[in-house]
Image (cartoon, rainbow, N blue to C red):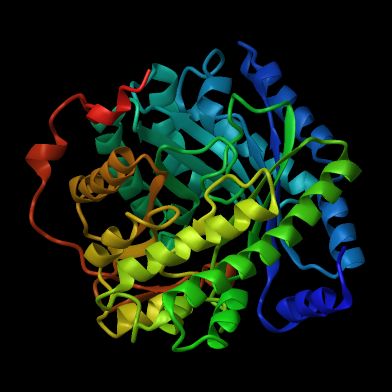
Length: 454
């Protein structure tokens, strides 16, 4: 039973503490669209998406209005396009036509973003995978709503270093190609280790091949709610701190569970998971870094930051799993730079570096996220950064990711403005020592010994 006090509590979270359902994401399988004729393939993909998701936006708006819960984004994820286009696409330009089809379908149904322009290459790379990856700069530069991802490693298979090296070049190429837009399309690309099949958050969302034909996944976020709760227990013990985070995460997840179940019922699509991720925005009071400060740090990046983040991430997950039987995706705490005002302040104060962010990714939900670096950063250096982050994911059996923006023409001390949900980003310095000889070795890094569990 829900009592009046809980109703009032939830209303306060929404009105004063930036609680929202960040996204309803419909996953759509495109496996039945596969065709060896490119024109037929594009037509099938367009019809499949626009038919399955025709009521997604309207349903999200209706639920938001009826329950008074902000639902910020409505999105779509699809089966990784590298495999969908494998029979029909003979050139990278062929794959770009599929990117345009996804973009047109997304605009037709009114969603904010569509994810799944993706390839899964953790153990090897097919010709189709390579063609799609090489098409990414053009695809992202010519589309508005398409998001792309590549999974290059896993705890079971190791890290595909040939893929990592290629992706370093692709990120650099995307940066140069979109220099007139401050290289912003790089924001729509993420590289993963241990990518989950059911992630509702962009840019990494794709519809895994283990999923049903359609699925509803919901991502809910509430850094402001957690921070406000912690303000009431300043100076208390770690036990009180942890209990407060767990209870708050439980309440936030219940909101997501309500929206997910209602959307599933109205759309006639199975409910997949609730992703409880403390995903910040540039809005004041909606910051993961501010939570870390409330826990007791002067700035994110100060000594103790990794421990505080580990505590936060674990308690968020413990609270979430009590609220829903199907918590999944990337649940935990995100630490993007440009989307979190507190993180930006920490960088500007000199408290936070890429190296400290990398240490923090050992215990957070994802990885190096929304980090702007100098435009003259070498492709091999970008590949080295990716390899380091993938190794953290591989060894710790967790999802890690990298989303960096080499801002063409920008240097340390400059700032790039993305606007809206993406905020702005100070250009962060990158270690300038070479890793060329390491990155240019061929093959893959083997999986760690604990991968042999069969």
